[in-house]
Length: 287
Image 1 (cartoon, helix red, strand yellow):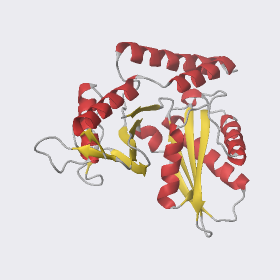
Image 2: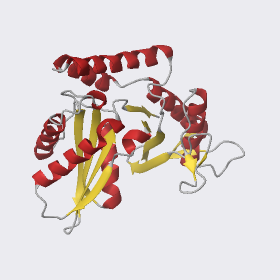
Image 3: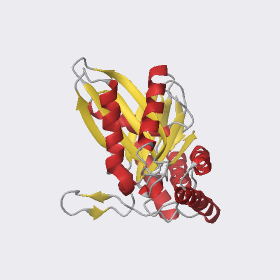
Image 4: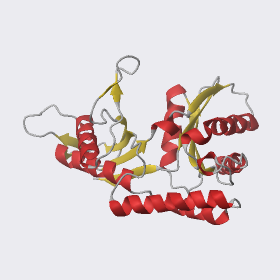
């Protein structure tokens, strides 16, 4: 069994939170640059170039890409041979405790807006630390710990949707619904989007799949030929909406559509759409 120090995990999460909010990933920048060059609408091309400039300034000046620095969504792949070594005096501290300590520290040190409230229907009091994080943990073979932080803004998250289709639903029905979800999101979710689609599993798994889909490199297509074609069809249909960057018109409503699937019950066909704005912030580290 390999033990990883609580402080090492917390420090890694701290760094990931800050880096995610300051640095737009290379694949997103490349997609924005390609979209700006191919845009037929000069105003839309200008907006895309401003988004690229915004990313450059954020990275150079070490300031957030967007004022909404989001919920900290943390994906954990924990090797079966890895355990947390708690700090002295905190013998019962867990991996989740280390992650939340890192989020609190990262959002404080990085001057990132703290957006988490407790008692959501009543008091809505801010926790003051952007914790607790949303943590998705899986056990995998090995002795490594893979940590991914996604800073998920409220505007785009609010426009995500789930629907339970009949198992007899045709592909075209699924496509039409996904496109309508994106159309309804409109300018409120800050296009151009990255669109994650989860198909299969059950109620909660389809939603998780739609969010995990967003972690793929934007140039990476599904390894399944059917779903790779579905991703292409969805992107073409979404961009044909003409919403464009910031909803002001243009060819680029979405930069990419990624589909992830899982087996499901014979009586079910769950589908979820998780929308990400142009400020598509996520970073990964392996301990």
